[in-house]
Amino acid sequence: MKAKNKFLRLIASIVTAFMFVVGITGTAACKKDDNKMLSDEKGIYTLDENGIKVYKVVMMDHGVPFTTKEFKYRQQVLERVNEKLVQDLGYKVDFNIEVYADDTFNDKLVTRLADQDQLDLVRQVAKENLDSYVSTNIAMDVTDYFNNESSLKSNLSSAIMKEVTYNGRVHAIPLDKLPVNGVTFVRGDLLNKAGYENLTSIEDWEGYLDKVVKGGSEYLNSKLQTVPLMGSLSCIEEMLYGAFTDDPGANYINAEGKIRPKYFNEGYKNFIKKLREWMVKGYIDNSLFNFNEFGMNTYMSNQVTSAVSCGIYHLEFGSLLSVNKAHPEWNITPIMPLATEDGKYASTGIMGEFLFVPYSARSAGVVMDLLNWHLFNEENYMLLRCGIEGLTYTISPEKSIDVPAAEKSANVTAPSDLIGRFMIATSVKYNMGYPAATCPDGSKKAYSDSLKVKDEQLIVDPTIYVSSKISDMDRSVIASANNTVAGQIQKMLTLKKDKTFEVSDAEFDAVWNKMLKDYTGISVFDKMTEEYNKIK
Image (cartoon, rainbow, N blue to C red; front, side, top):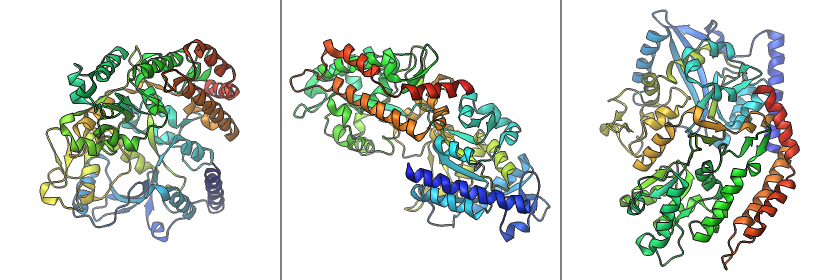
């Protein structure tokens, strides 16, 4: 927290200094080269030999920097991009993208803002960052630009735009994430052996897990201590809680219109009671409290478990990848979380990352045009992401993206290795809809199933809209209260060697009610409720 506050203070001082310069000179400081450029309401530009405007755009991103600036087909693709831009928008673009590693990105951003040189668009994570950029005037108000961009307006839902709107003004363009980010990866061969194609209810889950427990060595390694389902409590909660309530989030709005933590939801108590049943039956075990996602490959490969609840990317990029490669016959398959009765899922926010236009932007109108031009247009998006089909990428019948065979090498494994990058915006629809050729079948299905969930099916945690309105002390109060409750719930779910719980069935309701009575964070939730009522 101290590091974050130091970062924000530094940012604020930079903004103050910048505003002073603007106040004295009437314009932002810029590089000498930029002074030779022309400008209009969209940005700064030069004219090419045919008199067509070529706007200079500078963007900044986090991720893995390229180790070279030389890309075999970049110029050829740039020419194709600009042909399309002239056709559609009437101008060309000089693309300049700076990419910095995640661990140095914030420091580099501070430096870039301090330089006060042109910076037109930045991709950043976490809504908390946007909250601070808006409060310190780092992120420009782009409402007027946004209102003139028809594709952005028609494709970005009111729900996701709410996350970047402050006092009725738009301060960023939200980038979506997969609607559902947690799944259970189960051995498909065992699922089929038990007679199931999918698990879509608590009854299905109990039927499957019961067959694995009773099936012994037919399903798992009977020489070891096995359990059919593994995962942290939070991951299993994400999978199952929707079957117990119509509002399965970490925080919810109760019948009185007040924001409350999930512990006050009767459905959450029933969910915990169900887990107690599962503990006794051997469907789950105490690994709920110490589950290590990096060790999932060991649990699965040693046939200690048949299923793990975890993040949706763990099969393609996590430890399950090695198991999937070693045992393709297991057909590792994703199971989606259980939805509520009306088909909804909990969400910690529809927005994954966001793009903001800094106060030092000089081509704000152009970057907003570019976002409008490609973010929801498959042809334009794929041109910027992958280049020219047949030359820099191929698409399989299963819609997987690969590098042409003639171009493949140890240093060329993706289209970007041939063309570099032209944009920093990301589209889950197109990225996950066109996965890499190396993507496992189970991951492809997980992404496809998640993408079928629409924004209106998501119940967004109401606290994300108002968390910036409370103090660090208030956040500490909630964190402390939640930690205390988490400790109590662990006791309620811990099964001792004699198969009895630390909190008996007879004691359960009394302990639960006392836990709620002693919860110390209610006053902070009341503050958040007041703030939420101002903006809803």
